[in-house]
Image (tube, rainbow, N blue to C red; front, side, top):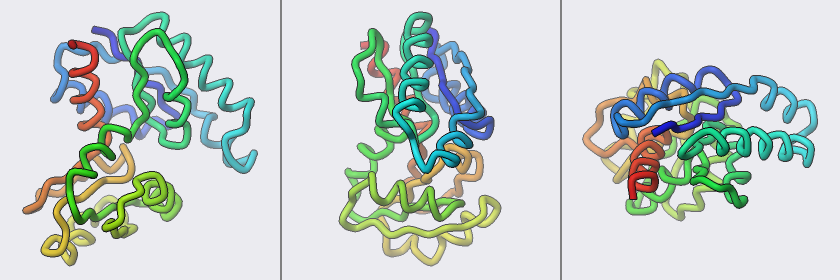
Length: 186
C-alpha cells in the first residue's frame, strides 16, 4: 500500500519512513518534499491562504496516487481535516490521541516555537514542557520521569533520539504509522 509522506523539511522524512517500516511494514512510502513551505510561512508570518492552498494541492496530488497521506509538518496539520478521497493524517493527531490516555505528560521539543505549538494544540491539563537539544533528551527527561506517566516528543526529527525511559515515549511518526495501518487496512 502506497503511503504518501508530505514533508516541509528533510529531517522529518527518515523518522516517518522508519516508523512505517516498524509499525506498518506493508506500506510503500512515497516522499513528497516542498522545502519552501516553512521558510515561506515564516516570511509571511504564518500559513497564509496561498500556502494553505499549496498544501491542499500537494495533498490532492498525493491522494490521486496513494492509498493514504501523512503530513509530517505540524504547521500544516490543520489542512488534513479537509475532505480528500483517501485518509489524510495530520502529523501528530494520533500521538495526541495516545497522549490523552495518560494523566501527566512531559512534552519535549528542541525549539521553543515547537514546544509552544504542541502545548497549545495538545490541550492537556497536566502537560509540562521542556526544550532541549536532541543529544540531551534523556538528560532533560530524567528530572521529570518520576512525576509523569508518559513523554511526548513534539517533533518528528526527535524520534531517532527517543530515550529509553521507565514511562512510555510517544512519537508522532510511530503513532501515525500505527494509525495509518489501522485506517488503511480496515
